[in-house]
Image (cartoon, rainbow, N blue to C red; front, top):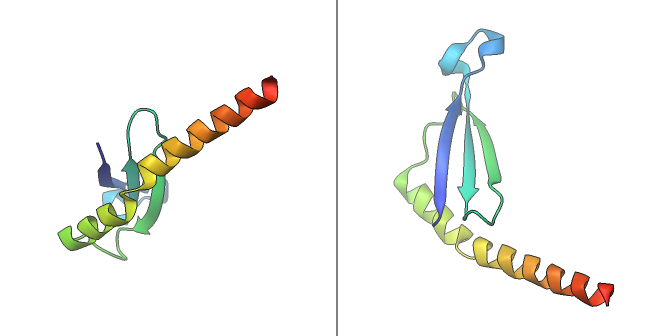
Amino acid sequence: MTIERVVSRPQLARGRGKRGGYRTIHYYGGNDIPVFLLAILKKGDRSDLSQAEKNELRKQLAGLREDYRRTIKARALELKRRRR
């Protein structure tokens, strides 16, 4: 399952509350794959992603999960070969 999210974080240390926060865009590809941080945006610089932007992001990320799994599998096989 693929999830793209925009999460708002307040900058409480600067006394700006939620309005002065930032948005983080993450990619979650499954339990066996790390969460990828794709972007950090100041909330004042832009609004939420539009549906068109989310759809484009999904297209661009379509192969990331499979590529990651394939790379990890290849590394594991290489490590097994080296141990022999």
